[in-house]
Image (cartoon, rainbow, N blue to C red; front, side, top):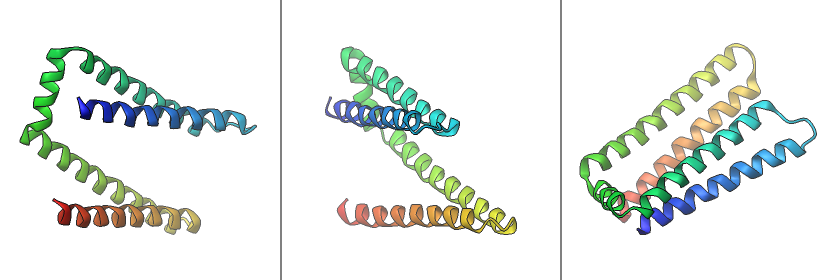
Amino acid sequence: MKSIKLKLTFFGLFAVIGMVLFVVNLMSGAPDGYVTGFAAAILAVAVLKIIQYGRIASHEQLLKKFEINQQEERLIMIAEKSGRFTLLLTVFAELTAAVICMFLRADQFARIAATAAGLQTAVYAGIYMWMSKRF
């Protein structure tokens, strides 16, 4: 039940962030369609996950199944590998975008994409080292 409460809190925070982003974008005077769509997507996913975990928390059978799945090694391994693979794909996409922007002489966009890829890699490496020492 503790992990359910943590997930509900986490997605509740995401929902608030999505609402704030949506409202700030609308109040900015010239709302950007991309930001509005991004905020709406964050809000929609957060609300759906809150409904999902709320449903799990309210049904004893679903809660038992959820707790068993949280302890299954295969599912834990799949979650870890999918997270790592997602990181690698996003870093590769950012570096590809940076190279394309360099060829197109869009240096500012190239710097932003390369910096994002570097920061993601540095954060991943830092967390990996911290987790290796901790566990």
